[in-house]
Image 1 (cartoon, rainbow, N blue to C red):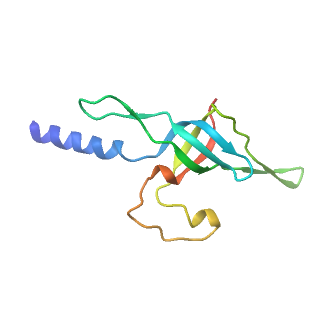
Image 2 (cartoon, helix red, strand yellow):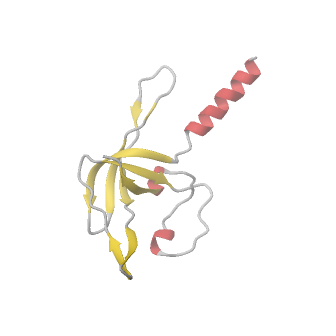
Image 3 (cartoon, helix red, strand yellow):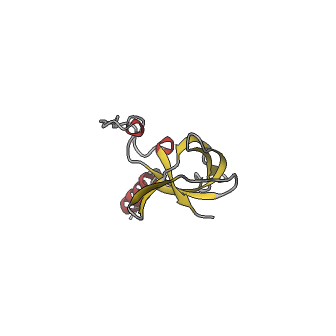
Length: 124
């Protein structure tokens, strides 16, 4: 029974450390750069300790949308306001080169980091 409990806890610890998507509150937004400063709303907690906020994430790219309207391609840029809640996707690997339009072979040590987040939409 203890062996099963150990592996279940080990698996849980690994899974909870992988960042995929999370809601964040907008701390500030630079519309010209399309970059946000965000406070993740999920907290972490270790045994026998109080819950702790995740660190603020700076320089988070905010996605824009392109649509074809009456045969013309229209680009729509996001407008975010301090205090709004947004949904953030965490990229599997580092996105530094990709954000410049370059193909990359990212460092495999940089997996699911909060700094590789992108804002994908507004929740509230």
